[in-house]
Amino acid sequence: MSDFKSILEVALSFEKSGREFYKNNMQKVNQSVAKKTFEYLMEMEDSHVKFIEGMIEALEDNKEVDFALQEEAEEIFVERLESQALSNNSYSSDLADLSILRMAYLIERDFVDYYENASKNVEDTSAKKLMVKLMNWEKGHVTLVKDLMEKIYEKNAIDLGFYPF
Image (cartoon, rainbow, N blue to C red; front, top):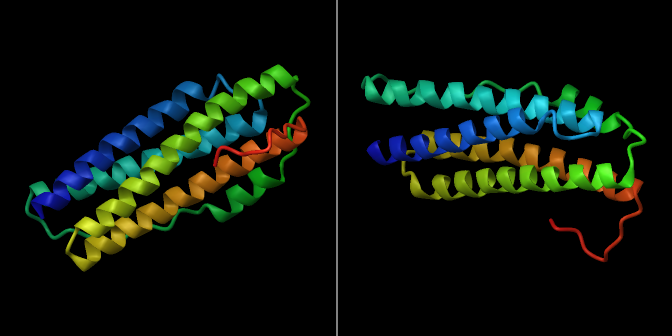
């Protein structure tokens, strides 16, 4: 389990960094739906931080580790976010948002990749399932950010012949 503890410590660092990214950039994005998305993602990363801290504490205290995750009540919030229209911000304002959203997208993709690799490197079946569950949560975050970026691309008729995802 010491390898698993190391995996969790790295995951904890990632999740804390993600939480801080959303906290620091929430006021920098101009689209109100982007602000709400960042607030939501900050809260989700915070719940991941608390969960992982509890897992590490249990491992350190030689307690039985509860691998069960609480389900994120994500569906309703995500549907509400996806149904919101974009503000009539300027083109340059939307481009600035895209820059920050792209960073968020990359952060979430890194989380997905980390949890996917971690799931392959742990032997305990419960720990493996936990890593896959965390990976799937982060995949939902990737989709949320990607969809918002696509909305901004469409709003501004930005068609460069490729999308960076």
